[in-house]
Image 1 (cartoon, helix red, strand yellow):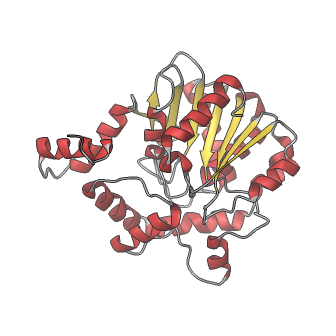
Image 2 (spheres, rainbow, N blue to C red; image 1 turned 90 degrees about the vertical axis):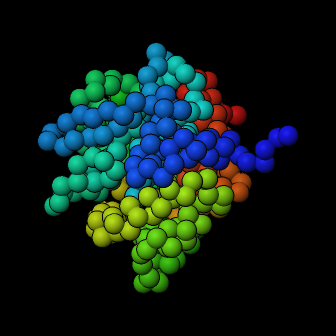
Length: 310
């Protein structure tokens, strides 16, 4: 008889049976996710900042992936699992996020982070690579491509920030009305609201991981609000840099994105001077590489290996 449980649920139930209720279960779960994606966790110091990152080795093309606001390197873990073995993937925690350094009083705008990211790639000895980013990470990736064009073979944007959408998103409407950003979490129960706001079909998370991420979001609330305010004041910086981008660009967007409206793609079509391919995904929210990692990886794989997804 076939089980009705999805593969991820079966996997975690088997882990529960082996480990029971160990206090460090969330660390074990995250480590297993990385293991299943052939990712190794690493660390490097760049200009007095410690960067934590994951890496999947490969002898083919290199892909640098940049997480969004409030996220971390594991936003790309399941996505990486579906890429070809020979594609090398590097997923850092940006300073201020995840397990990387979080010094107070530092500039955490997207422009500042793009410059730090270049120092990170330089320290790792990366010469030419593809760069992908989601949301805030997409804004950073786009600015990186504009500032350091010789390093970027292609730019891949998932629902990117940094550009004013012709059609306001639901989040923009909420913030403009004077209410707090929907991206900030007040308590553990509010984490479910964030998942519903961000995704059409939230990814499966076993209870212990969901509790861990909820508690982490609540604990980081004030810090994240501080960074979000810096980004808000920065404005739509990427939009002013679009004409400087030289690499071909693939843009993937969830049509049901409530955070940033997909009409940003119209601006990219008008202002980018390079090759641009756009993919609008029905029934998808703000982070397609999390909501449907297999499809997202297939699109990126085709783009990297063939230069097109059509």
